[in-house]
Length: 175
Image (cartoon, rainbow, N blue to C red):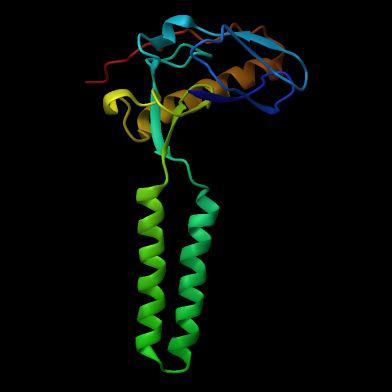
């Protein structure tokens, strides 16, 4: 399984090819070394939690650039608008149908990528979503981690020392 991460020091993107056998993630740009949590990879090389930050909160999305998907839809719309302008409804519908079919084919052909809510690390390859354990993006969980990042950044700007976030997020019961 491949791990793609952002270096906390230089903010460059780097990766570890075989995260199951690696004990550290080294940034090839600034040589910063981060220890990986070995308990995050379960037996059989499957992902149980994020190896970088240790959080079990991971979500799944398609490993496809959203801008390209939006461009396909926009181009299909623009071309069909031209056909509508010249009062050719059949080609306009065919262009819209073709762009929808292309989008559907890409949706089913493109693999998934697992992404950590806390550190935004990405996991690709076999074992990244064992038995469908991880689900799609959950807005409430994503907002909790976004607020955590904002609080940490605010503390850093004030000059306060910031400890690394806890390995397990505290669950609040708002019932």
